[in-house]
Image 1 (cartoon, rainbow, N blue to C red):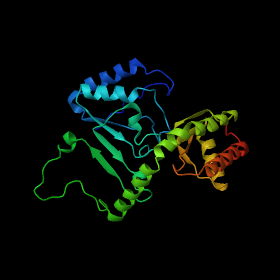
Image 2 (cartoon, rainbow, N blue to C red):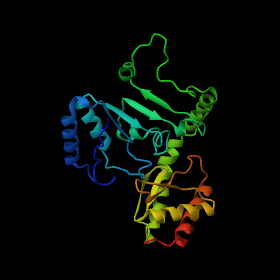
Image 3 (cartoon, rainbow, N blue to C red):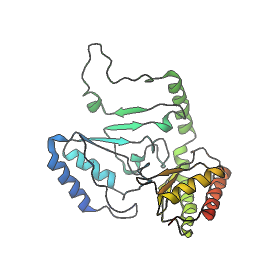
Image 4 (spheres, rainbow, N blue to C red):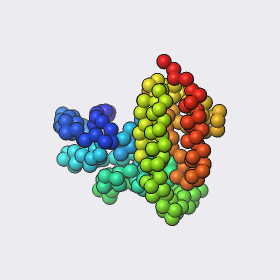
Length: 259
């Protein structure tokens, strides 16, 4: 089974709520031996609508897991490989997980995912007398692996994490200007991962459709579909990015808010 734990209230600029940590500690204590670990998208919750929790959230969660010897599992399939300004988002808080799930940016467009773990956790798998445990048809696909190696070489050689880190604030500032439209209720993000929030999912959907008609691909996100996510390639040219943002602004100008 599983439990859903509360996330800390407030955004990135809010102080970490001490009451949240105590609530989570109590949840862990009540379920005791039933719990094996905690899984979370660190620093930025991607498909949930690019939710950025208060600074210190991940460090506090690491400490709470350590108190009860729980495995901390980080899902960096969306945020990994430079998108938020560091190779992995968890580096922003100096947290090392027990298991790290990666994908998307790993394969550079080809389907590939991986789970990286500490020796303590990975060594807990039972030994086998011949049966292949935890396998899949496409595991270790040679073509995808070669592409991933070339992709990782480019990410490191071109320091694409620094690109997202250095240019992310300007991207965010440009998006902050969209608050002038009455149907934009929030703007949030980090690096090259941002979301613009609307009061209603119908408005977000209308924006995505209208933007696509202008040649701009956006992603509707959030638990109720009220967000529009912008996740440009880390290699995007400055002129191309500026053009995409202009198209986004033009789309909002022409989209009537749905009440």
